[in-house]
Length: 87
Image (cartoon, rainbow, N blue to C red; front, side, top):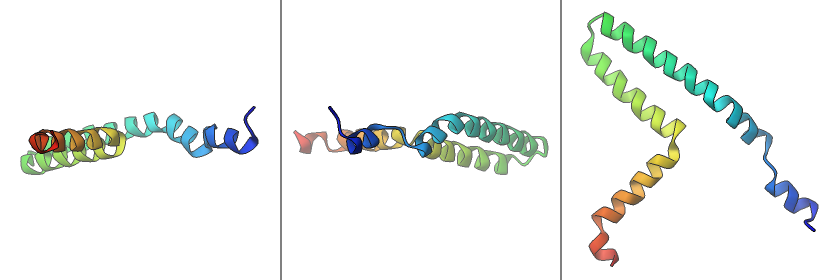
């Protein structure tokens, strides 16, 4: 039988529950803001600002909403570069 401290460590924290429930909503709002700003820049024919903002939004979305993808890309890139040394 597990003691109380082990059960507390295995339980979801309120912050994790909040992140799971609001993560999708915040992602949707972020995506809506990116679409609105991109369309505004495109409509004003500020193509350089549009491309810069689009690249910035892509980087921010990957780092905030999928950080595990960044770490896996880093480890895969390291393995690819140094596979001869690692073997």
